[in-house]
Length: 104
Image 1 (tube, rainbow, N blue to C red):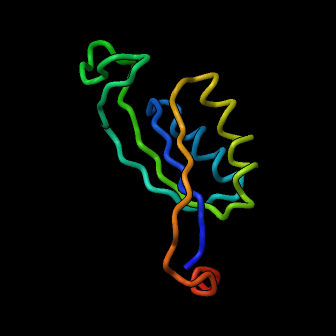
Image 2 (cartoon, rainbow, N blue to C red; image 1 turned 135 degrees about the vertical axis):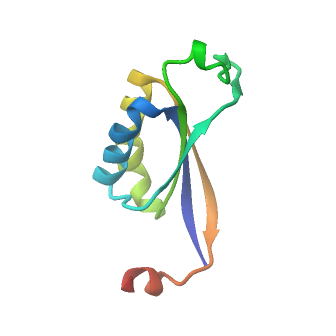
């Protein structure tokens, strides 16, 4: 087992390609995207009404090694500041061996 960083991003689907490009430029090449999410935030209120949103929201989850975190933040923060959205980063444990990951 080893410590990795979990990156969770919620943003407008129009910005998905920019965010994924930012992750890729930061060295995070794997991710999962869940489309058409709805919810309520303290800032924006309920986003379930399609008449009041500019597009569907996406949830992006990715993982990186702790030493990759600074480039991730440097690439993602400006996008979120410009286009909106939020990002959460937490510590998690990956149970797969690092050697197995490198051999894939």
